[in-house]
Image (cartoon, rainbow, N blue to C red; front, side, top):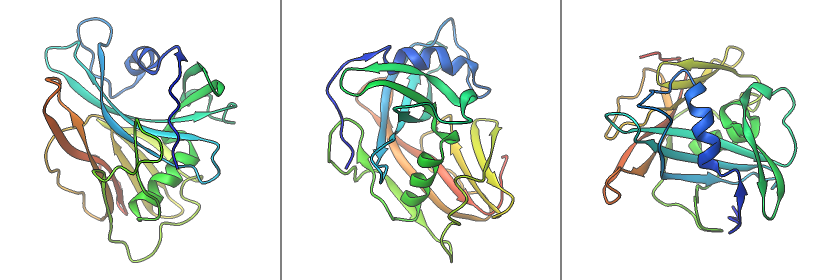
Length: 223
């Protein structure tokens, strides 16, 4: 089960993201540097216990209108081979030592566990508490067959407007993660076979919204 350590991080996750987010094609610039507020998210377990997996929702209040981003992050104790362009940054963890933080769309362990969540083979964990399932994360799978085991390692990552798409021509499957989160129901694309929805806090700090985090499909949608 996911273990959350009560310790220090140098730099903090917010500091890493404030530098990294403006480099992303789906980032919506505001007035000056990002002003980030943690808004929600959840964790998943790595069965081998080696990679930390977190789906973080952060709201940037620097612009005229706040924007909430979904940032899937994987945390490793050593560099991930071939993922130099996906490195968000490194942190000194008070318990675990140096950690490499990656954009999880490029990490096969995170992708595999997200697919396991959609298929109901794993359970989402609370973002800020150890060994605590998060029952507010909703997921569904309607496919006739399991997602191919090689999808996570054989995908091409594409930035699609306000989303990131992972597509595997060999398996004919795509996985879309909404980078810009929007409250309310969203129409699933044609060919959708699974999805994940969850919640995040709005900038007033008291109101919560729900929306679509990820969609598994047999057709890559760019709408």
